[in-house]
Image: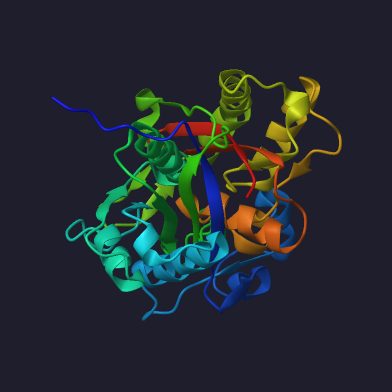
Length: 321
């Protein structure tokens, strides 16, 4: 039996993102439910978010983000042979979204599959893509996190409608002589599966306080494990990009990492303020927005960590493209 021979290491070659045009402010939401701009900012840190229109599909947003990531990488569709679409909000389980995205971008006969680890989905998919490249099962992989959460949120449920939004982010993963994607550290807390889920009428629910306590106590240690697995110290981190679930959670993770030696000048993603919680799309979208704004530069050491329903979590260190 012959085994495939893969690359020595892997790295992110390019990133891209897409958001719908419609901006929804806190003031607009306050006209539909019992809430205020001040209450939302204080509770979750969100000022505005993007909602897709009825005719904007998850697959449409994934195609846009994936195409931009390919352009940023300098590659063509024929250079990619695998597509992974991380999401938890496809309208149907069959057919999967990844094959549709691959075909529309022009990546023909691609290995294509969806991956559902909810808000940890992008980190799961990135770890999978890295392993595929290093094992020789793929040459280059397009990894996309895309969500249309507004399809699954009760629009007058102030606990969730103020948080969730729509969008997509993507990264192209390819071979490298030097390590550009560290080992993934992942896991789950299945005993807390009831903390986030779907109601019988297909609306997202979550036990907000329980999830908040879990995230603010468990995620920083996972981030530190990812650093240890990569052979790095907290002081090596230039950029922290956690899942954009809640600004207070993001700030708590950053504070705990700084207490362990992370630098004061470590850049911390705060895309939640303008984009809301976009689940599996939040990490790659934040990375692309920070790149466009000049907040990160090629070669920066970035620490990624995702967490969400399952409860699932994953993190890894990457070198910014």
